Amino acid sequence: MGKPEINVGLLGWGTVGTGVSKILINQKHQIYQNTGLNLNLLKVAKRTLPAQRTGVDLANNCLTTDVNTIVDNPDIDIVVELIGGIANSRELISRAIRNGKSIVTANKALIAECGADLYQLAQKQGVSLNFEASTAGGIPIIKTLRESFAGNKVESIYGIVNGTCNYILTEMQKNGRNFSEALKMAQERGYAEADPTLDIDGTDAAQKLTILVALAHHIKVPLNQVHTEGITKITQNDIQYAQELGYTVKLLAITKSRGTKIDVRVHPTLIPNDSMLANVSDAFNAVCVVGNAVGPTLFYGQGAGEMPTASAVVADIIDAARSINGNSHVPIPPAWASKPHSDFSIGLIDDIETRYYLKLVVQDCPGVLAQIGTILGNQDISISSVIQKEPHCKNSVSLIILTHKACEANMCQARIEIDNLEVVQEKLTLIRIEEFDF
Ligand SMILES: NC(=O)c1ccc[n+]([C@@H]2O[C@H](COP(=O)([O-])OP(=O)(O)OC[C@H]3O[C@@H](n4cnc5c(N)ncnc54)[C@H](OP(=O)(O)O)[C@@H]3O)[C@@H](O)[C@H]2O)c1
Image 1: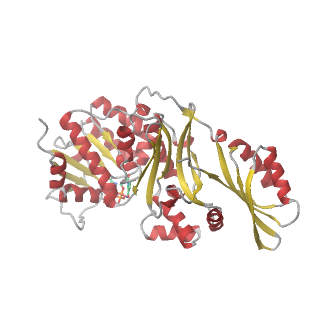
Image 2: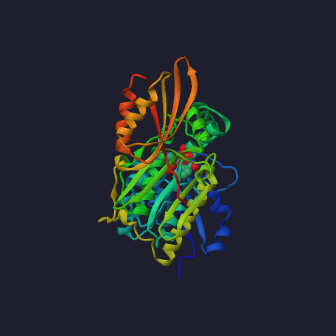
Image 3: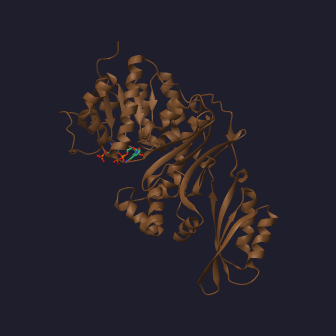
């Protein structure tokens, strides 16, 4: 017989916290009908008061500025951390775990950095730690990987997991905007933060990828071992040339197994226009997981925003409440166990083999292509197509080269040699290509 009522405390009543309070209060009956659980939002903490939110009324005395009345409150069963940041959240969550509370968080930065430590502490205390909303917002990819893929070996994951970058790239492609215009629009629409660095430099996607890899490949990957490139160098020309060649540029978070190695990388990628991921537009997210038994699967939805993210948080609260009542917890992900075991180690980016899009701005004179072709040939890189664009200023032309599959280390060497050619006027732009075989 479970507890008749499970008490929940929210740390943070910002965008996501507000959405969570709306669902817990306004859809209390729906949750009861669906699960038999009686969830009671007992306390909500924020930094400053007074505060009101349209669309939800909290009970009297529910709001507080004192986080201790949640973390140390013996009546609270589940603490939901929606503050963000690392140091303070980590301290609050650790204390709540020691106080025997189950934890739900949407904090990818925290889970990417401290997931293992927090999990081990939660396991020691016999409480659960759920983090569905930390990766791809409203898309239930964490639970899917942990439960629905338990009978599969995950072969690869390709994720569009940063809505800001996807919105910017979509605007550049569909409406011909340049990068700065598209970024400004993303900020005006609330998709990008005032300081968008962590989105556009790929860090946010890399943090989410480390979480996916921990679950899919049972290996803890430090953030600095994820090969990470953002989208700041992508130009309108790159987007157009890629389109002409039948490709769309997306920021992909990729993990693939190669024997006992796994690739873990985030970078702009050319993908075929007719692939499903190429048609994931605006701020939407999508995660394609390829399992050895199930084959390719695709999960699509809103990766951020008040209600989609709150939906994932509430699903975690329900899981935590079920654990409290049934006294069973989803086991610790092996990557985060105190003695982790994985069949994989992290592969070097230099060892990957992929196709490449190369854009060069060169002098418009005879013999240039031969010089470039020789460098590529010496590195075992064969060209699959070349396009020369009309001179965009006197004496200079753009060359767009697509290669067949080649080794990254060879491409790096070729890049150095090409950039050193006298006829080359701008540093080479290189974007990797993924051709999906599904
Ligand atoms: N927004 C999204 O779409 C989204 C999507 C996925 C994951 N997430 C994650 O969800 C978490 C919350 O994001 P958010 O967008 O909801 O943030 P937010 O709108 O900035 O809200 C943060 C809330 O935390 C409160 N807070 C901050 N420091 C506090 C402290 N020391 N003590 C008590 N309260 C404190 C703030 O109080 P005041 O209101 O008084 O300032 C505010 O209510 C983050 O980890 C974020 O990465 C967000």
